[in-house]
Image (cartoon, rainbow over all chains, first blue to last red; front, side, top):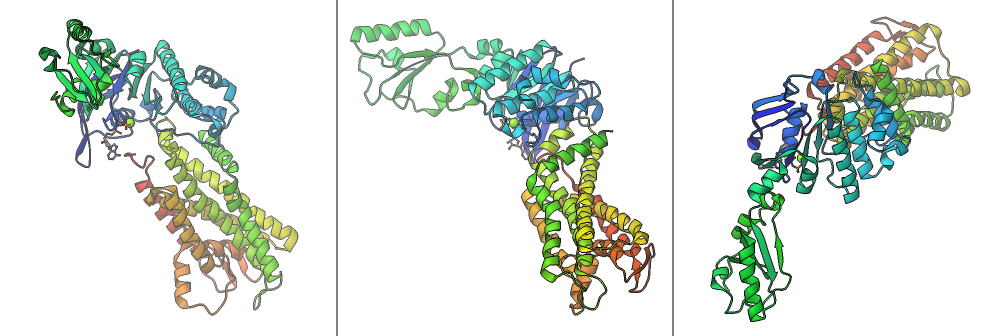
Length: 312
Length: 264
Ligand SMILES: Nc1ncnc2c1ncn2[C@@H]1O[C@H](COP(=O)(O)OP(=O)(O)OP(=O)(O)O)[C@@H](O)[C@H]1O
Ligand SMILES: [Mg+2]
């Protein structure tokens, strides 16, 4: 059975679409990521699957049930980590987990879970004394205590420092190794690449691309960006006209986006060498998926649209 | 079992909130001591009861209302603000068990707060108990707790945040406490509209259904629907109070949201 199956899901808030026809499936044992900027519809999608919100249209099945109808039977089998922290600050770590444990028919032991989320040392610590990363790990522990088949992680690492993020990444990888199916959301491509088997890029309530991180790179990372810094200076007259045609500038940077960088770089450096013209801060990069989809002011199409064409 | 566990859970939370413990348990006792010392523990003019005999049950009722109405509403709204209610709703715990546990917990706290004032009154200020009226006193206290819990849940359901709940509970309890024989001993020459307001709202009925059980000048066990000034008549008062409580609970059940921004 496919743990998550969504077809043509739609959801409006006061007539404004937040999710506009989203379809995807998550296979058993898979880690699937929703990647998208603020307001893309990630939380809305996830909370419809968790049963917190009602959908306006489309078909949804979670572990074979409809989360809009099915109640406790489904809740016994899913683990939830909400986007915003929801803990009782007065309790200790152990009390918190013990309390949640009592809700489930077939739970893990408290010790097991605390060890898994690496909070065994803090079991007697009050929740309010935990760091942000530790609180997040505790919430993941609460998501796991019921021994769920399917775990929802809504932005598990937002607001954490790089160390704490790594920590959570390792935890998510461990969950996957335990055979859990995971649906997570994120703003960061590096996170999705590290954790997910497949992802959907969600923008404005629509899926813009779907596939494995590698396949998305192959499809969309086809342009290489070459840039150097010119500042206020003009380009010399001798700059090759063929290259000049594909230029655009941005705050003193001269930027080219080319499908095949090798011959282009040969031409550029050849000219620079001949003319003894330095190319300060010369760099060659591939735009990341985030730049392509998530940040409309950068990336190939965005850059062409947003910075004025050079008139040098 | 789950219900008891959850009740205990809520009691643990309460005990770890010093401000709540102070306002619900200590405040009524302190006010009792202040009133008795301020007015002197003598016979109240034109009555046969002492200051302490009047104020002990009155402030016991006040403590119960602080627990079941004010604290229940504010703490539930705070949990909702914290996202705790939403998170709980995503577990298989039955919502009704969770809410009943909160209500049972505040009832336990209310009875403890009331008992504290009564026992201190009895031990140090000669407050008398009358065995034939005690059963009705206990019934009144228990039903009062449930009724005010229903109203507390209603306020919580009406308001979006714990700040508003705090404002609404204070704005309702404090003025009414002055009109409902809680903070001020009954006196004769009040404007009729004041009496009318006080008789409409449930607090006065709670304070008198419980308070009249501690009056030597009132006879009977309270289990009567009608009687003169000399009779302890609790049933009509309990009926009015329960009507408020049931209405509040009904509205709360209709409006209550576990996730203020969501749909459940
Ligand atoms: N309860 C709500 N009422 C009205 N509009 C809402 C509500 N929840 C979300 N929206 C709107 O729906 C859109 C999608 O929001 P959603 O929270 O699903 O985005 P998201 O991808 O999770 O964003 P973020 O990365 O900021 O968490 C946004 O435009 C948001 O303003
Ligand atoms: Mg979100």
